[in-house]
Length: 174
Image 1 (cartoon, rainbow, N blue to C red):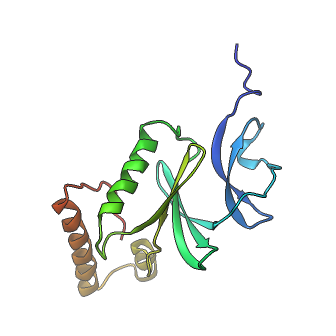
Image 2: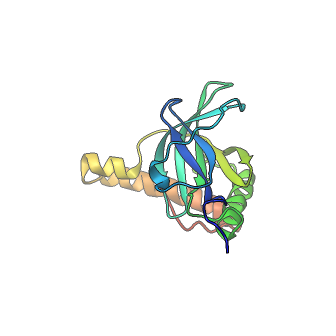
């Protein structure tokens, strides 16, 4: 018999309200994992401070972050806590990092770094300027045809760059 109180539940990104940042922590046992306070020493080197979650997919979450050494804004994409670190979805994030490292196009987000802490993986991505398509549509409800065409052209150019290199993207964001 395995005692669930003696073995780790997961490694996950958690929000540290005192430090106003996200941190990676291993959670061993908690009756309510989503609302647990974790007391842990904080003398590890920090180079990125996670500020807020800005996007969430089925398996990943993306955070607005600040690079402390150079004062530059970044995005950090991590696997959600529900995803097994050594499983096929984690391998997919590693594959995404390798693919992004081979691409260079203004319509494709650039990868700046890959960070590992234990078995967890984080992709450090360039921030993308401007509003999301969802925010644009929320403010206007209907795009001017010239604006819609310009957005479609940018997407097509980015996709063309990917397809020329044998990459098929399954989730587009504008």
